[in-house]
Image 1: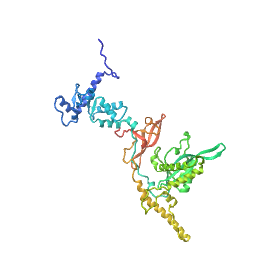
Image 2: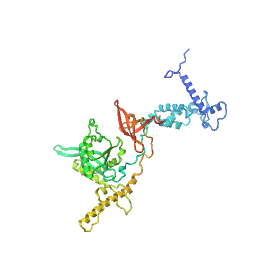
Image 3: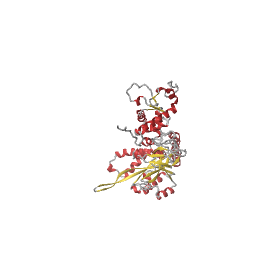
Image 4: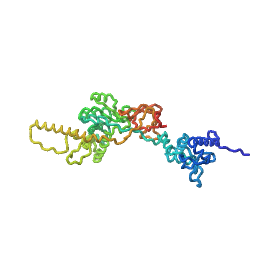
Length: 479
């Protein structure tokens, strides 16, 4: 007589024992939540009208498990689809089953997971809420599709809101390069690269551009000296902590302005200038000068399109930069009024040049003292007009936030995060631990220090929270 072959579980558990265990767990969980309904069914009495599963027309199967009665009993569907097992949505068993089927569909969305649960013959009460909650807390889903962090947009710094002499508070950045003709040879011509340093006044929104021959500390100091000689002393410089301003890049063999060089430090100390850096990879924190670089590039591209490449020399490029500065500084910084009584437009050039585009009425003959006095009064009048309109018309345009309107949970020390790198796919982005959080003056955390493993060594980075995706937090219920 052939021996009965029994299916074995991969862990060596008898399949019949496994099924009995599943039935026992389901009946135990069902009786805790739907005990009154089960007792009524066993006694062949009506289910209470206040039952949460009354619309499912529940019944007991041959094993005593509560199932959906429904209206599909005459269909030729499989029994699991006609009469799925009812599982309370607030039970731990429901969460385990949802997690199991969510993993089987490879961490897809709620529709995929709910379909897999229903196909398995399970009817979880409040399934949409249970599945959505699990997907929200799923670390794998956050790693694959989690939204990057953000925090409510910060208030503007005081150096953008207080009247001050032009270019007292300055944001700067470098851009380029361009190839220029340096000398002509028998075989053709020799080309060299040129870069530009753009200085933006944070108060008046005026710009100043200096052309440099190379991105080096000495070349940058010369550009800064030319800028200060023309525009006057600078109290604060702001810039990104980008590759152009990183000192420890000798191994990368790239041109940089080493702001940690002693020569730059001495120059800044002599000029009593403070240099403030934004965190790396946070261009949105320097939008006031990033915007000006974009405008400058577009104007310059239009100029270069009208010039043959072989005729672009250092002198021509410097002239173009001066013309670009004039165009940008002549732009309106407030909406243009349609009132015919006030045709003047408010531009940075008014304060820089103390001139307007309107023709000056001829003055009557007078002695030199009266002439000087009238010219001085005109200059003062233009400056006063600019600052009065700057307060009345320009400042209120900075009031509304353009995005990031609501407070968000702060990224805290100990959080496990995904560092989103622009040149890496989500699966290749490294995970990191938040080692320190840096709250702003309003208590919101917008930059953090991360501890990450690179090449078998522990490395620390400072990054804005907009580059992070929170995976786990020991300080809140995210797991």
